[in-house]
Image (cartoon, rainbow, N blue to C red; front, side, top):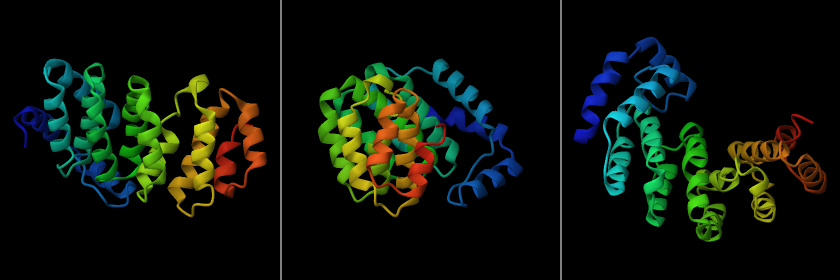
Length: 221
């Protein structure tokens, strides 16, 4: 374990709750171990730890995030997401490498969706010239989680959403049998409907989407 993480490990161990850990593990289909720290408490711990332990190099931050991704308890991956997000102002074009690594390792909706929001969406605001090449590659990938991120990275863009690209990526996967892709299509449309409901309604009516995607997209209509 990286020396930076050792003090945090002690805190996590002190706050561990076996009952909550068992429940969290079951919720994510027994794929990951947990300390069992409630989300609000874990976020508070992580925020205070990051503030109290500054890191001068973004290269070192990325190294620590990658090491956190190797650890068994899921709280480490959640911490990694918060740590890299904290240093957003220091990100480089090459930061996409750690973003892609974390999307494709220990992948499940809990980390991937957070990465889409806290990392991918913010990265492409900083480096918009990367959007077409990177998200295009993700959308065409055989990796379901990269596909999902290509659908979700604009979720908070509101009126800055590139609807042409958004439409293209959805149409490419509209017939997908994967639950997490169908869900992502509907969820992303539902979020954009808060900004442009007429566009979403017209899109849903004009395209053949799965029942799940349609239901999610039109949930608040």
